[in-house]
Length: 129
Image (cartoon, rainbow, N blue to C red; front, side, top):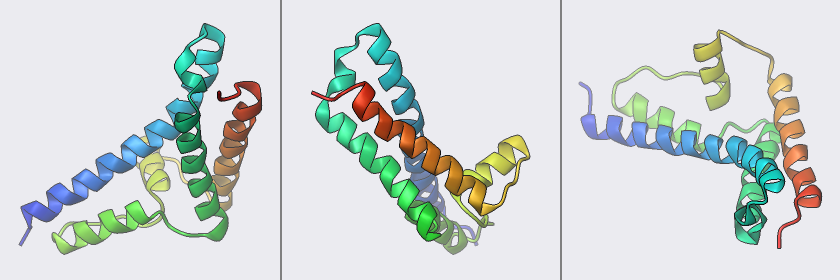
């Protein structure tokens, strides 16, 4: 039997995960764009610390081979609700689902590491105030 509350919770965790990914990816795009368009908010120290911490967590998890806790929680909720789950990381699953693309784990570690380096570089190119 399907438990609707657990489905809602699983979907809530999925949405939180999506917002996290959007914050990390589009945050970097907006930081660099804001530099060229002279947006003052891209220099806000606490926003930049949160952004750097977010990608640092992702990079560290990938280096350690740890599956994201949000993925684990979502899958546990879906399994408890009687729904199918997916294996691997959140990004791997949705890349495969949306783009029909699959890659070895090392590819994702490399992509996360390069992206994390770009975020770190933004601290020197677009210095927080």
